[in-house]
Length: 262
Image (cartoon, rainbow, N blue to C red; front, side, top):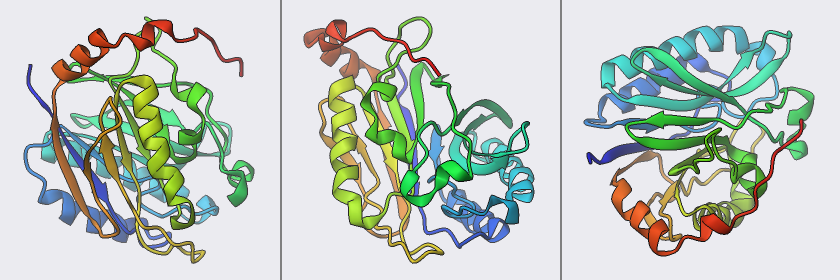
C-alpha cells in the first residue's frame, strides 16, 4: 500500500491580515513537493482573534477559495481552520478538509477556549468528523479539543476508529508541556498516529507561541517534531505497522462504547 505523505506547516501568522498571510503561505507551500496532505495551524489566515467581524466574510471567501486553488496546484489535500460566518448569523472556528478543488468535509471546533472568551464569539460544533483519504481514516480536531479524551475517542458510524488524528492549534508557550504530553496521550490511548500543528510567535494580544508541532505514532513515539521556528515537517506513513500493532495489542476492543448527547 502506498505511503501517506504528510507536510505539517508551522507558521507565524500576521495578526488579522488574511490577504498577507495567504500570500506568505502560498510561497511556503510552493516549496512542498509530493505531499498527499498539507496541514496548516488553527485560524491560519488571521491568528486566534476574537474579532472575526473585522475580517470574517472576506476571510471565508479568500481563505476557502485559496485552499481550493492550492489543493489543485499541489495535488494534495489541505487541512486548516478559518474564522467564518455560519447560516445562523454567528461565527465558527471551522476546520476544512479540501481536496481536488472541493471541500470534502469540515469540522466546527467543539470545545471553546473559555480563558480567551471564545464561547462568546464562536459557536461550538456538535459533530465528530472522520475523513476517508488515501485509505486512511482521519479524525479532525481543533486545539482545545485535545484536552477532552472522550470526545476524541469516538468512531465513525461503522464503529471504525481513526488511523490518524489531526489537531490544528494556537497553543500558547506557557502551557506547551500539556500540548506535548496530550499529543502522546491521545496517540497511546487510541493506538493511532497523531499530527499536531501549532503556530509560533506572539499574537495580537502578546500571547507567545513556541510551536512544538509533532507527529506521534500509535505507541506514543515522536516520529518528527519542530521546535520554535517556522518550517515544514515531512513524513511518509504506512498503515501496515499500525494495523500490526493493533493486532498484537488489541486494546481498542476493550474500550467503552458511548454516545454523546448535544
